Length: 571
Image 1 (cartoon, rainbow, N blue to C red):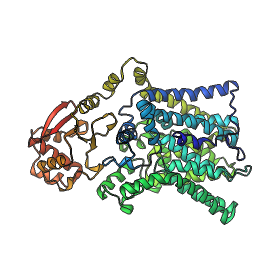
Image 2: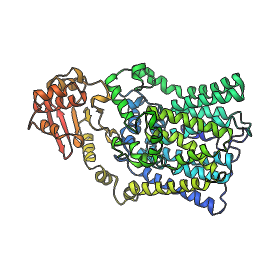
Image 3: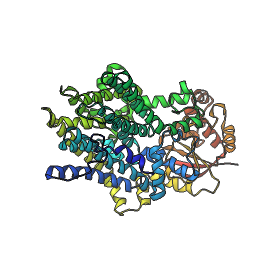
Image 4: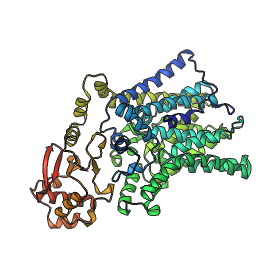
């Protein structure tokens, strides 16, 4: 039963007049098929290598919370509220699977579910495009999907955007398939609702797809089915989706008072959060892309292709984000070609309408490229359909092929060469981590060796997956547990930390400014003028408190590293 969230959305791979799983026959014929399968398998092998290799800092969210939170849930024996890691309140369908993977095979067992999603995604899009356009289009749709950089990269990680994108993208495709002229598929809306339910249960951005599908299905149904038919179509999709996803939103509401915590705090409120912390979160989401000025819409579309670093972490404000998080240029080109070819069928126009509405919501809410995965997948199918239908079809095919090759080159250069060292046994996992995360691997080993009963406050560090000692994200922006607002000096700070059960403090100094380093070492303590200037901002106030506590001798250094340090709270 546990694999159903992966399998169910893809059961419609061969939908044909309401008969599911009716055409699973699969046979290769000629060099064309063999070449296509070879590309898909090779990209899958790159992902498999990443699955088998330990995740490092470039696989940020995997070891910060996608696997770290399920690990904590396993330790707690239940899926519960984890104060200080607000990500534990997100919809967690994939994390639920990761829990089983962690039990069966550690982090590789968990990440293997992402590879499963990749494999089923290739099959699903092959089947869909073949049914819509013919066999060759099936291969191009699968290649278009596999060649998306974020798809190829995340399929070997604990990220969830590929699964979410497939759930949401398939929901859109099946929703419009109900309105095909040549189809008698009464079950397409049911399948759309199932897929959409898993999208809503995987990531909050599934709500955007719910809105887009509801709008398009409503209008399409009004013209084709009449008012009652339109209402019935919308309710079919929406109610099934909400029924599947609602346990996650109910759980979050029970724990926090906000079903989409910590978003929309100004409207829905929520415990352990306030307007200041909400503003930090909003600023982070708005830091991607080119801004929400409507005049920049064209720039945002093109920028995804020519400056992807603006749309991905880290350093997105300067365009320094990792290109592995991009969606690439091929699907964007496919969308433009499909929209301008002038030969669109009804279901294609409806699918483009869903993509267009989804893109507008993405533009105004957060321009992070990973969020566009759910729109890039329908574009891969539409693009595959243009290959043999329009005069510029060969250009789309060439774009898909070039994008896949560029993605393979990027993934291989960026990570596979180093991952192979540990996967092939040339270096041990411990050696690999010490080479790729030299400071944190030492820190984690030391933290894990602390006495029983220890609890560590982490500053500027979130990689809790590798920690076995209880820990807490201590920076003020993560929660309100530590009462920074009311603390006035290092002594009050340490007393508050004692009361909360903390025994140690860990400082990641990689992001520390020189002034904090000097104050921490008691070389030049913060002046009264600096206290007056820095205290109003909690992002800097915590530095005042920690440095003052160290200067008062209330924190005793346990171990220092080149760019980090662990201190014990003096009792």
